[in-house]
Image 1 (spheres, one colour):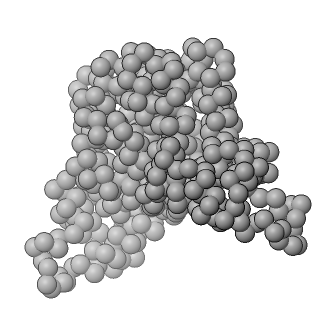
Image 2 (tube, chains in turn orange, purple):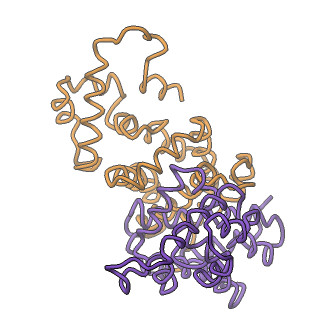
Length: 206
Length: 206
């Protein structure tokens, strides 16, 4: 959360005058959005995005901590997807489903839910945003996890996890259906976790 | 599907001149959207909506087959939610999870997926649309089913089913993540069905 506030906007410390680097930082985010959308996460290069924005590639590390952080900022994600993967892979395998629920709820509730609503609005009206969400699920979060822990069909398992997590966010923050919208994290980890666990490590019946 | 084409727009048969009833039919749909959004499905009355649109309440039955059909048309759903519930409740209880997956995929794929994308776009940018989707899940489809087959906590079970079905639609039609986006109905019924079954009739661990 602190990371996000820091990288998204330093306004609280700088209000009143615009720092020299702000325009180039904004230009870099625009170049990143365009390039990630056109080339995908793997195809987009930090060097090309930096060149397009007229900044040194080293500034990407300085401002965003690397390519993943730049992607997160370009998508207006509240946290870096690399951090999410690390959190999910730390701890017992059989509790991974519950951990996924707790991690996402922590990130989303921490950001007030509004970031998720904005993401869904973008994804459902803009193919570039949809593509970035695809990358987020498949390349950054659930793809690597399913490849590591899934007994078979990692790509299908990753997309099944995507259905449960995207739907959890939809019902909690967009549709706001009770009692789920105000259920505590323990209730949701216990009720939703085993379903994610089956998608990751269970028998899919196929 | 035929019902939807018929009730949404009779353009193919009528192109070229506007029939006398079309303006009042449109006025009725507008009154319905406003009233369902303001009062919820239970609170909205057919009589008040018809009066507001300046039509006889009998026309609601004639045009839409009743209040549920009017709701479906106002939400631009491809089928009447009452028909969905009936399909889901017909057949063995232990296959209900798979049946839910097959029914929704049949409806959505039949409508080309675009209707689902439009629904998500509305719900994430408009509180009225979100409220109607809430009613659809809780009052019309999963709420009644969970009350009938769930051993406990029917409202939580209904909203959990909502997460899985909304997420399935998001990943298949909005995010379009492969291999799920083009997986056949058998694969999805087998892999997703048991998770819905647990939400409806299983032990939630609470």
